[in-house]
Image (cartoon, rainbow, N blue to C red; front, side):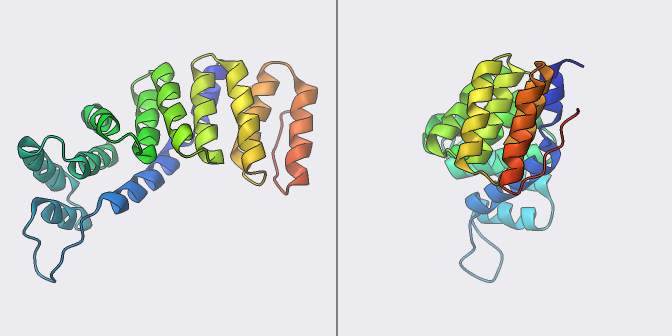
Length: 211
């Protein structure tokens, strides 16, 4: 397995993706104003989500979007449900529509970046989208996601720079250390990888190298 595929394999998308998608569901949720059944489409769809009926919720969002194609909340919620259902290709145009309509939505850019990278085999587009997310929210986590997309697209130098930036941003966050150590080892820079392991240890982070 080459270094790019190995790095992408370490993305840990399954657990991370579910977490970010659940956050998105909370952000786009519409709270019902009464204790009874919600009368609006968004409220009804949210109630179905609470019951675990994501397919039913998607159907309601789609009905709403036929009337209001630029409804960002409906687009976002439908995209999240489709991702949770594993219907990545169907989610893609909705995600792209959301980022086109909302220039400040970092979370959907992260999710779209994951879709490009892990499901569409478009690492270059993933890097561009995650770069936009970083511009909006330059967290260590988003920086690490960007670096992984850059590495997957063959841009190892920029990926390394961004990983080091992620470490500087949050020295106690373990993931960029791990990715950087693997990248350096794959390039035969074993001594530098060891230095990163030591740097991590100084900040209470345990990183295993392969020496």
